[in-house]
Image (cartoon, rainbow, N blue to C red; front, side, top):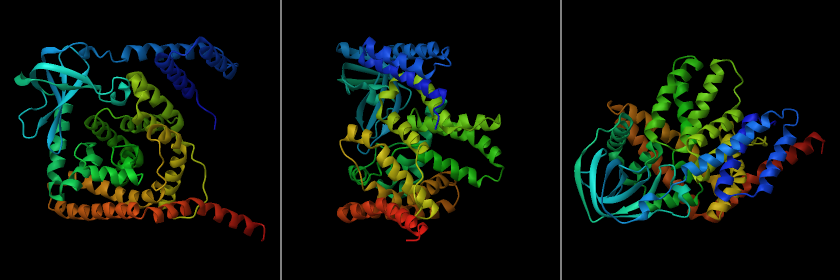
Length: 446
């Protein structure tokens, strides 16, 4: 597959980000420029442009690197605004931004407090503790750098909350009310997969999905949005292009409610790119779309490149675009799940080993079991939210509760019978190889 020009634009920009962070010497930079000259020897006028993109990466990296200004001294008092209130099981997490700084922090308060989004707070005897001073990139999605501790707190007034923040708050409250009858674990799971609020997930649920290699289902990802797009567009009684156009503002609004999460805006960005290409009768090139969307995303937030969520999201999409053809041995739906799970297990192995120091071979059998159920759960959850004012929502909630019981129980069985599950995973991996050999022998008349 020939790489589009957008790949080299993105690569030059990423090299610039690496130079900004690691201060590569002149020899490595010269080798990169020489490589560009060789690749574009027939179009040398493109090389100066790519070098400018590289320089842009260096400049934007340094401009966006947090300065940790609030860390420099102990503050006697500080005034700022509550940007978000995240409800936890026993406490609330308050996202707080001082008026004179873009660097945000958080602190915890006991539940049932009267603090709300938009409140102006006055903190006394304040101390800031960097969440990860040596590696701030892990938290750059939300630009939250500090944990805040203080002696006393008081409300000084209130600012008007913007439309999106208010909509996000009301959506979370509505979803919590709709699924309140499900019980704590089930309700928190639905909140996680519909609005990305994972704060109330219990340790047991997190461990269950982590050990079975299905943790990607807990966080809003491209899989969720793709399922949502496919499900909703398929039920619209319009032509395909009309359905896509009608769905676009809903998708954009959903992205704004969820916030600044790389997987979400990757899917939305590619959706916009391919929709524009379709309308103007241009080639719908998903690979080109992926590179341009990644480039634009990193122009807006350069430090996101060093964030694990960004890397896994875009690498997973890249892996799926380069997925080889496998021997078919399952019905189409499960074959697609198997191919994606198996290939991404291999393709993302370097990242998983580097960051987590382990692999999850059970993910092959776990995904074959969990993803079809999850697809049903996600669609029913969204339908329940939309139809919560109708009597049918009660029936949908009961169905949802049953499906969640099956999902949790099935994953528990998989992890509790680890050796058997591992053998099944290995069998599913190697079965296509035997089928291919058998078919080759049959063609040879053996």
